Length: 169
Ligand code: GTP
Ligand code: MG
Figure 1 (cartoon, rainbow, N blue to C red):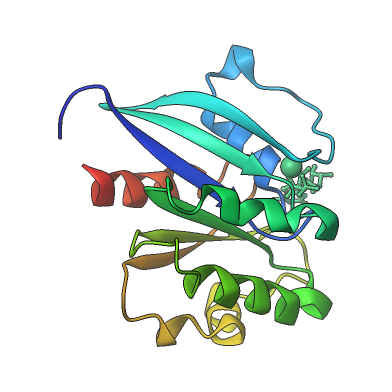
Figure 2 (cartoon, rainbow, N blue to C red):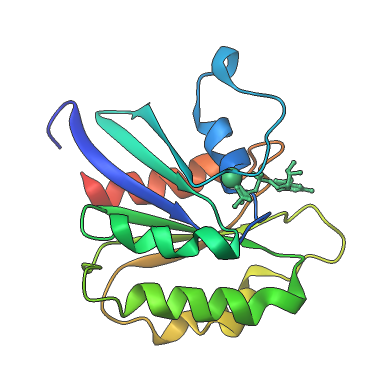
């Protein structure tokens, strides 16, 4: 890949799934915030990942802000879709939002990384079950991957980002 190439990463998923927490783990340790609060609207961060410069759009997952997501579809070079593995009740809401995103006319055939986040919780669904609940095997028009993660410790986060970076180089 070209050194210093800039890519836009759109981070979406329901409120409380752990998007902002995961993004903190991507920052150099001294810059990481220990506490995160629910995102209002969205926030933008620029992060270095190997030869790539990621411009990360951290969207709020709250219902009243979800309509903002589509404003950034056209510019997205990749999507990170975060799912709370323990939120069984809202898995169908996650699926609905994901389907709307994938079929949106402004969304190109960019890679999608799914974080099965909060993998540490005892009631967390295994990634294969989440993949089934979301119907991920029906996605044929773009590269996708599901990765279990723990936003608090960072477990699984780098592995997921490595997969994404390989698809962007
Ligand atoms: P919105 O900005 O409202 O859309 O939420 P978000 O998806 O950015 O979630 P956020 O990162 O604010 O995290 C929500 C809560 O989940 C926080 O209390 C985090 O500490 C917690 N959390 C995030 N990741 C994990 C995880 O992997 N395991 C556990 N147990 N808690 C997590
Ligand atoms: Mg947030």
